[in-house]
Image (cartoon, rainbow, N blue to C red; front, side, top):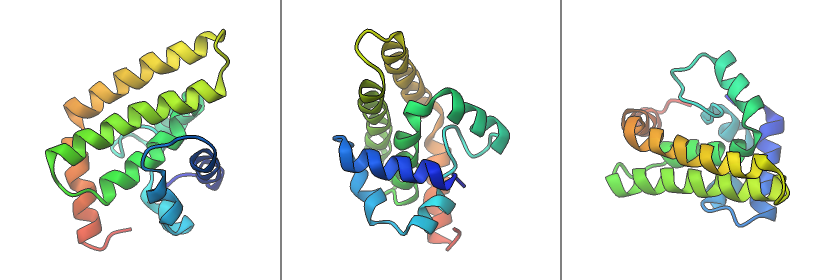
Length: 141
């Protein structure tokens, strides 16, 4: 579960920036989105650790929320899985470029982190993707 303020930031970003997949968030009931999404990091991480990652990687929050929804409503295909992870990376870059000026090193660190997280998602995220789809099909959340 994410905090309401993170949800509000994500909605603002989707309305302001060219966020891929943002329509999935804008169409979802806010309370349901808050319940489905868990913040930056895998659900297997303790919530305190995910909260710390949210604090240290604020440029990933919007991408993470959309990513969680993309997994939850996923089609179960490898293409959909990879595309969700690619959108996570690209959305992180879009937000970070709008959050930090071109002379701010955080812009470039965020870009590197986005690529690293995407690689981790591609390598280790399949089980979480399938589990999220199963949660939806089993009526959880």
